[in-house]
Image 1 (cartoon, rainbow, N blue to C red):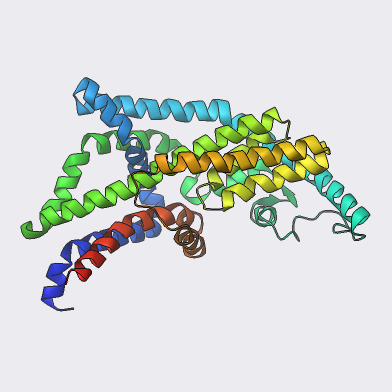
Image 2 (cartoon, rainbow, N blue to C red; image 1 turned 60 degrees about the horizontal axis):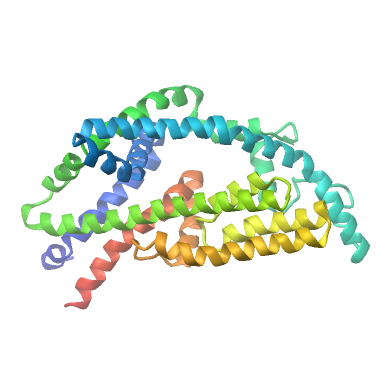
Length: 352
């Protein structure tokens, strides 16, 4: 690559290398850098709240402190209000799953003449997400919430690190919010003066893309979870809260969220409730959610340039293959950061 090409695309090269180095360091040193990563994510997501407090109190320290306190209160509320009910429904669903599968098996054998679970339901052999959970989180041939939590929180989330992170992450979040502009200026000072303005503009575009996508998707996930939690409870579908939470989270993956919620809901309506009213009610609930989302989604995501759904799915599968659970988390945000850089590169190339 000759000097003229490097000079022309210097901001794009620098930002791309920065993102690459950040991801490499995150995966290579995740037990060490996780508190910093979590603090940055927390500060980044809550930045609009910080700006709101900053306009009122005019001091960054006070605004940052109030923001961190609000985050801690939200986490505490989640742990005290939402988590116990969610864990309870997970345990009840695991206990009820053999009963549900036997009902499905009975009706299939009745109308098709073939039993699917002739020897009983064995999650080891199931070609479903549940079988993956069973294989990864089973203890003594049983799937338990404790085993699930132990597996998820092992390694990076060991008991000692959790205790430390409870103290360290809010403290780091506070300092990141206070020194956000100073950190950005320090980064720009490392770049030759001739490229600083253009790099700053590109960084702003990357920030708008990433912040718009993450906050928009989190808001949509929350709205979808609330909608299904209310509507499925009203139509008396068992485990409505669990289905709503999982559907809200999976809604961040295009097309997946709808079927994640619809399939178990319609199965429960057919084989648990067992009447036409509940079947029709579930269909109406999910079709109305699609209609509402088509109205709300463009308004919530209006600040983003938009990411192709196929690219999101590819990024998640790529992250899962090469980065495991952490790869799934960072895959789409990385795409959101790279796209403005790619667009900038293509605009310059087209103008040649």
